[in-house]
Every structure is written in C-alpha cells, then in structure tokens.
Image 1 (cartoon, each protein chain N blue to C red):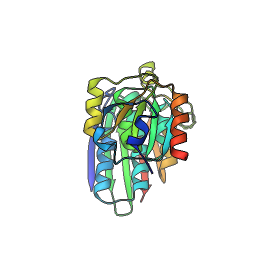
Image 2 (tube, rainbow over the protein chains, first blue to last red):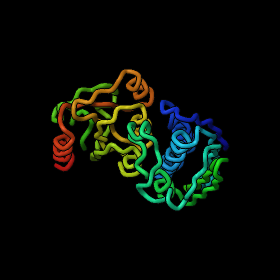
Image 3 (tube, rainbow over the protein chains, first blue to last red):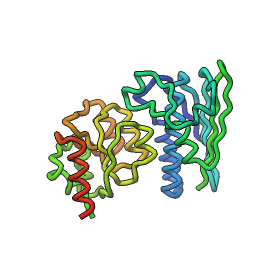
Image 4 (tube, helix red, strand yellow):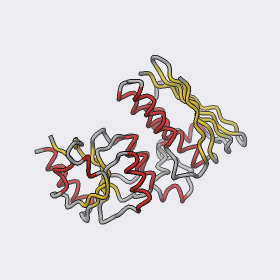
Length: 136
Length: 113
C-alpha cells in the first residue's frame, strides 16, 4: 500500500496530518499498536522538520507486510552538519516555532530512537530526503 | 482502574471538550512537559499530559502519543478553533487552575493508591 502526502511549509495548523493519516492506515491494517506509535512519532518529527525548516515537502509512505518505509522529501536549505543535527538539544528552530513548543532539538534523535533504520541524504541549497524504516 | 471522570473533581477540572470519553478513558499516569518533542517521545499511552501549551500542535501530539487527555494547568485555556480540532480528533481537553506541581501530586495520589 502506498500513501502520498503534501506537507506545507510553516503551516503549523495542519502539521501532523500526514503522520495522523499514516497512523490511521496502519491501525486499519491491524499492525501492532507499539509499531504504530513508533511510526507515528518518527513520522511526526520528520514532518515537522519539513514544516519548520524546509518550506514544506512531500511524504511517501509504503506499507509492506512486515515493515513501513516513510520518506520525507523537501527542497529546503539542506542540513550543513548532520552529525550536529543528530545531537539531542541541538536546534536551529526559529522563535516562532519555539513559542509553540518546538525546537527542543529532539527531532532527528527521536526519529532514530523510534525507527529500525534511518538515512539522511542532504545537499546544501537543494534539500533533504529522510528515509525511515519501522519493522512491525 | 482510574478513569478520566475520577480525576475531574480532585483536580478541580473544567471539561473543555470530550465529555463523552470521561467514563471510558483509562488514566495510566501523568506526564508534565511543554516541549513537544520531549512529550511525544516520553509520554506513555493513557497518561494525562499536563501542559501550559494550548496551540493546535498540542492536539496533534496528544493524538499521535495516545494521551488519555490534555490537562491545561495554571488556568490556561484553549481557543475555540483548537478545541474544534480536538473534538474532530477525539481528544479530551481539561483545564485546571492548579499549578502543574500540585496537579501532578494529586494525580499521582489518585493513580498510585
């Protein structure tokens, strides 16, 4: 099963809708609640990164019998130092996002923690593709 | 088993939305934090999430993290458009004048007894 979502940049009102839609689809398929929660958390963080940092993007979700692959693709500024971005507490979120409770510097670490595999392809000035795999 | 309806009076709560779930939603504990990423990664299914944040993003986090409810502490309220979203998503929102520390202490007493 394949699902596609458009993520709009700086749209904090609808932020989380792609993750919520994926959660619903996984629930309908009878996937284990623990795996669904991990997928929902990881995807929410990826979705919010696209909303906050990248001017939006797209999410492509592919559900297989034993895992789900989530790919969030943006055309944003790219991540200059992935190693630094992976550190808990490191954040470049603007004040407007921080005032809403974002910017804890936990996004990428949370994704790593909740997924079985994650990879980041990023190019400065061109964008970032984050691929997450969660086993059921 | 503690249900949402059991915490309303001790925590001096006003029910802002989701009244229909008070008698069915189980409360497994509580979590107090105002950083969304911290909450989504640590709050456990069925816990009462105590926060002073009231933007629409709080609803998304509560849905994905499967909280039993959002409990706004310190007299914080939520505007109608956010409550509408919470109704849509099936999330109960409560509000209390109690400080977060007090709310945690009372809730812990109820859940642990």
